Amino acid sequence: MAVAEGYPIAVRHPQSSTECLGVNSKRELARLERLVQMDRAHVLLDAGVTLADPARIDVRGDLTCGRDVEIDVNCIFEGKVVLGEGVRLGAGCVLRDATVGPGTEIRPFCVIEEAVIGANARIGPFARVRPGTELSDEVHIGNFVEVKASFIGRASKANHLAYVGDTTVGKDVNIGAGTITCNYDGANKHRTVIEDDVHIGSDVQLVAPVTVHKGATVGAGTTVFKDAPAGELTLNRKTQDTLPGWKRPVKVKK
Image 1: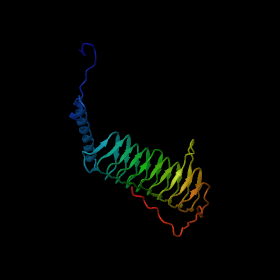
Image 2 (image 1 turned 90 degrees about the horizontal axis):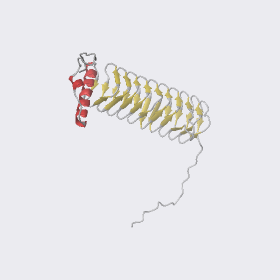
Image 3 (image 1 turned 45 degrees about the horizontal axis):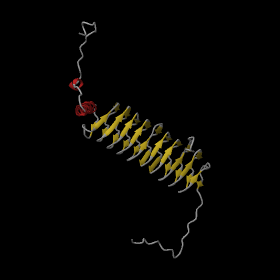
Image 4 (image 1 turned 180 degrees about the vertical axis):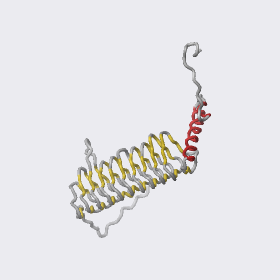
């Protein structure tokens, strides 16, 4: 009928038999998805990538890997993802439109979206790197740390429970546990600048727009709402009192 109507006829040779399978149910669709994913896993294995379990990887976009990359189970890749030589991915990581430099370790259960990570960095576990972020070489982003639209310089660290948003961080900076950048005033986003060799204590709030200058130290529990001068200690004065004879309330049994 096609010939009779003048349509051109051509022959195609599929690379895999899975390309010819039909889908008539959710069960068949799930089976075909696993077959396609296994084909992609075999391509990675043939290229020298180590997969902890080839049956538990989802490549939903374009994944490019350098030599000696290791990928643990249940990792998901979306969009265009590039992993440099010697990158190690822990279990359950999700990467979308991300570039990861050579020698970097991404520990289990991290989410990395539209970000660039340098060489020999250490991310996670349980870290989230959001769009617009660039992490330099040897940066450490630890557990339950979120970074968004920020640049973090070489060998800087935020190892625990922090939020770094709309921030420029220099090199050799330490950001303590519980630190957050207060970048949103309810209508607009503002930028925080942390220069080289700054030490920020735990539970610090940086109210943008604000700059912490080179070599400064910010004491634990401080709210920084004015620029912190270079090489100085900035803190909010506090007092601690003890009430003699105070008794803790006792729960009344019902």
